[in-house]
Image (cartoon, each protein chain N blue to C red):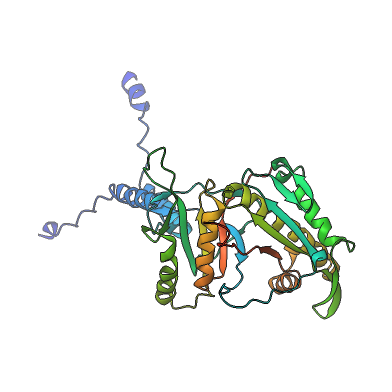
Length: 152
Length: 198
């Protein structure tokens, strides 16, 4: 009898992990579908301002221009830099950049939307200079990139 | 002899999970989830400053002047606004309310009969002239733009209710396009004059 009692106390079988890959693959496909590849590394630090009346921008034909302090700049240094693709450039380079972009995208300058990712600490004067260059380049559709503000 | 024909053993698939995890982590690191959001604007076409310009005569009465100083003080018409007037209390801020009333009030901006979807409605010809100092902080400037957009959206909502009997954001794409065309976001920015600045 004593032997029988010992036998009755069975061990719990190990949990099957064969479905773990399926779960992980499901997660993987979700992330692949829901996200986009990061195209360029930021060279300037941009803290985008908050706004309420914003709309989602169509990724197609969207051209980004960054403006902010260079990353790793000394504390006192506050010269604003402009980043086009993955290089820091000057305001005067914007026109060439727009014409080069329209060629690679195969559309006219009127069909692209220039997304201005400007640091909230930047000045309007510098922004105006950029906008003037865009007007010269005939890229008139712009958008001020902003974060959605939490409405209280 | 038949015993020699062994069944091929199953491939151990326990590392499949590890591989999948590795891929998952790779995608998590290299991709971004955020959607690009922003405030859309259309710039006026470039005018060569050397060319003879004939300024478009805009009726002074239809213009609301908004000036932003370098310290962030705001003048709307002849009234002074503080930065707290940009903040919303409830649905609107003082600035957006003021701009909205400017658009609605026939005493303050002229109404023009405009055809929308086959019928004519009176739509304001009001224009907001925005001028910001070069040294103004971008954050303040965008907040002003935000409130101006809000005022125009409120006005579009008004017109939309008159035309279609529902709110602007409930309209389909064609209807919303009609409203946008009839009530453009008239925010004009003064031409920067380089002559006065070095």
